[in-house]
Each structure stands twice: as C-alpha cells, then as structure tokens.
Image 1 (cartoon, rainbow, N blue to C red):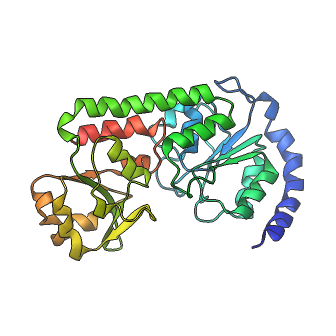
Image 2: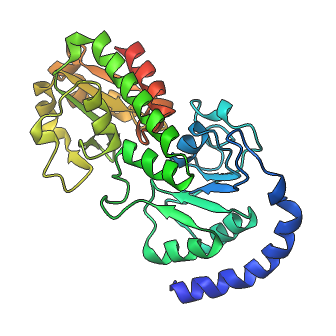
Image 3: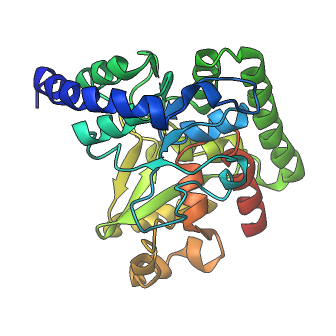
Length: 309
C-alpha cells in the first residue's frame, strides 16, 4: 500500500483516536523514575530494554513474542521487573506494520517514538513521524545491524540522557571485561554461533549482535564463518557440518524448540566437536536476549553462558 493510502486510512482513524486519547491516555499524569513526562513508545526490538535501563517507563513497546508465546508482558526475564506500569506489548512490528498497528501506536498518545533497532522503510517512517517525533537508526548502519553501543547512544540522545547512556555503555563493557578476566582459558579460542532452521544451520557473523557478542567474550569467529561482511548470517548445510570440527566451541541457539531436529541429526551428533564437548546449547530466553544486545540483556546472557561453560 502506498504512503498516500496509508496516510488517508490512518488519518480517518486518527480523528476518532484523538478524541478518546485525551480521556484514556491521561498524558499529563505520566511521570516515570527518570522524572520525565514523556509518553514513550518503543518500536525497535530491544529498544524497550534500553529505555527501561535509562529509568524511563514506556507506555507501549514492540515485542518479538507472538501472541500466546513467552511471557504475556512481551518482555524477557531480564526486563520484566523493570516495568512498573501496565504491560502494553505491540506485536508483529517486524513482519507486518499495518495501519492497525499505527492506530494502536497513536491510541497510546505518545510524545516520542523510539525505533532504533528496526527496519522500517521510508513510508513507514513517515507514517510514524505523523504520530509523534520518532528516532530511527542513523544511515551509517544497515537495518538490524546497528552495534549495541550505538543503539544505546542514539536512544539516550533521543531521551536527553547522553551521560546516562555513556554510563550504561561503560557498565556493559565492564561486564564483558569481567568475563574475559574470569576466563583466560577461553581467550582467543575459535567459536561459531548459529541457529538450526529448515534442515540447515544459520551461522551468525560478527556483523550480527550474536556473533559480535561471543567476540566480546574473547572468542574468535574464523574467517570462513564470517563471510564477506554483506550478511549477518551464512547458511551451513549438513554436508559441510564437518567444517565445525575446526573450531573449539559451537554455540547453538534454541528458538522455541528449533534445536530438537539438530540434536537428532546423526551428521551433527557424530561431529568431533560434539563428542569432545565443544557444543553448547543455549535456551530460548538466552537466544532472544542475544538477538538484541543492550544494557539489560548483556549481563543476563553473560551469566547464562558462564553457567553453561
């Protein structure tokens, strides 16, 4: 649908929403721990975590969870206790951002929209800007490939909390440093991190948050698993699984039972790296957290990996 048609559809609904939002949103009464009266809606995956870490309380937030899966709040265990207000997850923003979704956002009467870790095209960005001032990631980075520290900087700047953002980055860097110091035996070891799907293994490169995460822990992703830098993952087919024997550690992410087939795959089960104990299975919560490194997920994942190793 063109932006013109989207805008026309949305505008008609907005006339109704404007009338009811003044009564239901009660924007003048919203004050959070940071002392802000802003009504913040986050639409980038994991942006809600950074906003919560900055002491703000969003009135709505995008979630990766589908209806009926995960916690009803749409938040991970690393963030749930940080939310003091009513949970208000906004679903399916990565697959279909329709006028219905735009109306859901508008009904929250936001004063700021944060959509940094996102992939909205120019039409959808223009539509969101009609609702409230919106912050998207800079043009320096591709969609879904914004480094976690840059995400924090951009979100903190949008909320006028640059100093607090710098503090969160420093604390996150220290968490990585503490792990590296506690595990000198792992430094420089080679590692691969991936997710099984459709009978193959999707291996994440250093350009993805999951790949960069294990590198921050001190592991090294071999060049052949990093590709040419044009993609955040590379497909690895079963006939090439033996290449995994060349690495010291293989981390497999379980997204809602995705690992079951791989565990029963004889070609994978008989790999040397598996029989020598180099394969580590990371559960769904850890997998989701690694998909979006931020001030809340970083310490959570480090704890989970530390326990696994």
